[in-house]
Amino acid sequence: MSTITVERASRWFGNVVAVNDVSMTIAPGVTGLLGPNGAGKSTLIHMMAGFLPPSAGTVTLDGAPVWHNEDTYRRIGLVPEREGMYDFLTGWQFTLANARLHGLADPQAAAARALDTVEMAFAKDRPLDTYSKGMKQRVKMAAALVHDPAVLLLDEPFNGMDPRQRLQLMALIRQMGAQGRTVLFSSHILEEVEQVASHIEVVVAGRHAASGDFRAIRRLMTDRPHVFLLRSSDDRRLAAALIAQPSTASVELDARERALRVYAVDFQQFVRVLPRLAAELGIRLYEVAPSDESLESVFSYLVTS
Amino acid sequence: MNATIAMLTWRALLGRRRAALLLALPLVLLVLAAGLRLTGVADLEASRGVLGALVLGTLVPLLALIIGTGVISPEIDDGSIVYVLAKPVSRATIVVTKLAVAAACIALFAALPTLVAGLVMARNEAGVAVAYAIGTLVGGVAYCAVFLLLGVVSKHAVVLGLVYALLWETLIGGYVPGARTLSVQQWAVSVTSALAEDGAVTANVRLAVAVTFLVVATVAATAYASRRLRSLTLTGEE
Image (tube, rainbow over all chains, first blue to last red; front, side):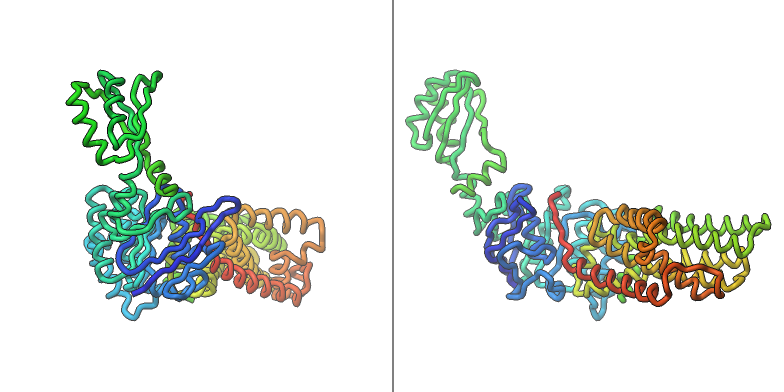
């Protein structure tokens, strides 16, 4: 059982701050590192994997710093995001080379076991450059697992995978967590993270925005104020009726858009009330569109709350 | 030394177009040597000209540039070096192993063809063929160590290497005698001169100076490359 501790870590590149004063503890089990693109997820993972020193603060594995400490790789398995991986080798040769580099007592057995775990034994004699994205991802996973590490770090493992490969990898990650490993993977898709991780760390614009159980994060994300754009057969009458509802904070008649802009404070209640109200008043709803559903706005709300 | 790293380096280096280039350059030399021999022009003088100007002056720096940067730059560029670095292996072992692979390539693609070309042209008269082959080897290894370091510290290793070989060694070294003291090529010439019969090859740098600099350059470049590799950072999301 291993724990990664990030303590007040910052990382900047010139004038750009990629990670800003982040503290988090990654314990055994599966943790999802969630955040929009460019939030600093990769920077954090690279610091945890010893491929980037924090500009300030510390990143330690079981108390020992990861940077400039080649010995920690006995306990860390890293699945990088990039595709470069000695494409001229076969899956077997690649996994075996990784086992040998770890100086394992029986590299052949370790490589065979790792390829079995990721269910890639069937294609092990094909060169890597003939593999699909999902197959490559699984062989990368096998390479990270050859030495049976306590910690597994995966950088955007689901990127570019088809739905079936995604499900397979999710099952594999859950299995790794259930075995007591400390598994951390990054993603910018909430649905992906909540299906695998019991614990979620959210980073936005380099800052640690939220931390906790996925249900709590999900609630934070759906309970925020929502802005809707409505078009109906009678905007003014609908506006009057909506403002009487406690779930609505304000209503604006947008003359240029010829629509209603509604600011809802209670998302769950608002989406139940709106159709009922329209039906009661005999108003026809032509369009109900959330106007700030972009992931960035969801995340930025998390940061300010 | 690490056999797995050697295997990965060797296969990555000799894959694709690079192998063709590494074979083509010495082939040109051998064809030229055979041509000179067949037309009857080949003698000690021609042999010295070809082995000195063409081999030590052009072929060796070029081959060493391809090999020295080739043993590490492509892996850093495509990110595959991560699989070697994320292991409990000392960074010095990685660099020394890669340099050893580079040295083997220099022996195969530079020193051996030089020996053959020299023998074809002048049958090792005045010990010139063997001397140039050894000069090629030691100079080539020193070049490789420097270019390997460039590969670790810069994304533009090939350009920097060319600037050094062309601008410093050829242009500045050609006009400013002092610059020759800091020229891998001149150190290699000095070693060659010492191994050949007296007066067969003229050196600009004293042997003791040349040997010292060859050793210092190779060792220092390797040590510094190991240090820089230890601090190699990955910056994703690019």
